[in-house]
Length: 392
Ligand SMILES: Cc1ncc(COP(=O)(O)O)c(C=O)c1O
Image (cartoon, rainbow, N blue to C red):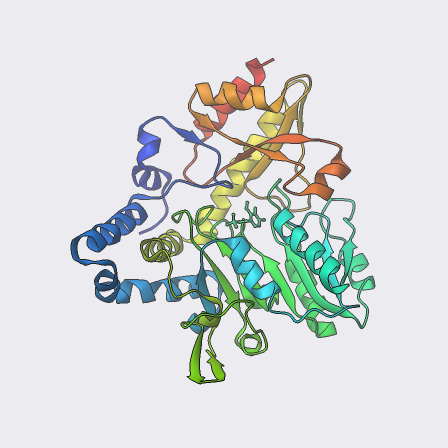
């Protein structure tokens, strides 16, 4: 299967129903094969029982690990299926035995849930948080970040593509710094896996988390964590169950030696199969091709919006992705969102709560977030731009 816009639209039933979906950074639309795989497994659970369905579909469940590994350039034993990106990230982050005086090095545009976790361990254990400033383009200032490293820096933790804008952080450059200083490196790739080519070796990270429902186009309630094999046994998960560990004697346990130590025994099996199918679907289309298409569409959308009177496009960074954020002077973002909704155009709103420090700096409370995917069209961009122009 090679990539064609028409082919992917045929695989996306809502496109034929006239839905214009620019909320792919929220949750994208599942392609038919993904939807079918999820429904088939749920049906099998109804027909023969949940445990029996799992046994029958074991090969499909295992296929998820190969697909996830290929999607990030890792190995299958380094993958854990987890219900969302936040919990995947947490399983790595809370596996560190945080000590008073440890320092976490992060950036201004990190995701709110990650910030909440930093603050929690700061309050609980006396950990310090160092926040690298942005450079002139708005991406992480890599030199300033390196200057913040001390011998107490325990973790470098960054968000690749922040939730609220087009910025792509230069995570590969930071990877080189992390290596040079021998500091573990955690990357939140929630918005980037499925959107752009991802290779953990190129990034140089040790842990990477992502979600299923966004650019990967998997089902909701799915995600995964990748942990470099040399790090797996150094990280003791914050929670263990009888899948992650074995009760070896009355007073002892043995934790697994693969990344499944970060998983739960009970999980959304239909979703796990669906996520594997979604990852394979994206790989078969060719991530290089689909990424080129996303960049062309988002560039065109930014140009079209910027040309409208009163409209400001807020996306920062030297390199930008499919997430386009904007406001219109004198018009509430909620008004624009509901006008678009009347025309079956989905967008979302980004608020301070999601990436607080970033928006505080920009002095904007709420922006409209239109996130494009490869199946969107120029005509759909035109429809959005037209409504934004007319709304006041
Ligand atoms: C950058 C980033 N990280 C993490 C998350 C959390 O993902 P999940 O809702 O799957 O936990 C999001 C969700 O929007 C995000 O944009």
